[in-house]
Image (cartoon, rainbow, N blue to C red; front, side):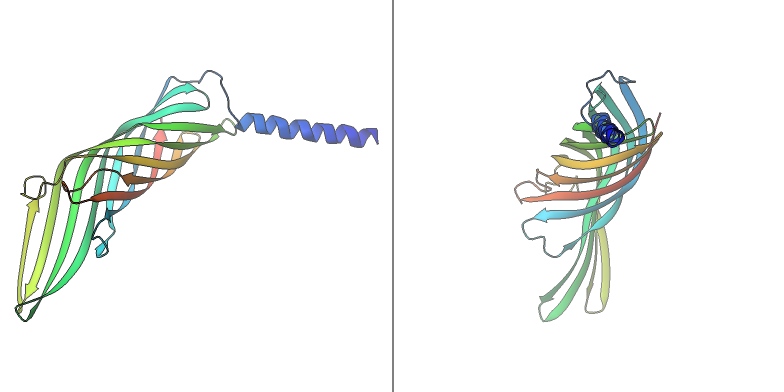
Length: 219
């Protein structure tokens, strides 16, 4: 019986030690700032009013990450990233008794600054998981909208810079991001989702939503 009780106590102590190891840790971080690089794929779409005909569009996201470590279990996750968001859609309209079909594609390229609050679950020397949430801010550097139309057998196509056209596409965007990443050694694998809170076009009521998958390396 004594051996059984000792084994039970040891098991409880082991579970408690494991829980403490992955729980909140106020200890000083090994690094004040952790720098890294990230690259991945965006799956973006336009949300809001009159967007039922729009489809998702793939894009690139990559840049330099910076974790400002406050304690071992908490950091401010930031960096600078190049990110592409956009959408595509097919339109068919009856114009003067003839069908007009149009294939529209739009891509906006941004420089992005996230400011995420990040909680760290430190499992062991090699493995840790971050859960993060907070605002992000985008500045548009270039955007392109291309439309190809077909009417009465005639095909035409045109493209415009969306930031220079008369439709008042906004360069500045902001929203909220939520995600998680896992670090194994120096390698990082992450998933995140962004909800846009600002209009794509002034006064229209549309915004960007974006899902991202990424890989990276911490120095």
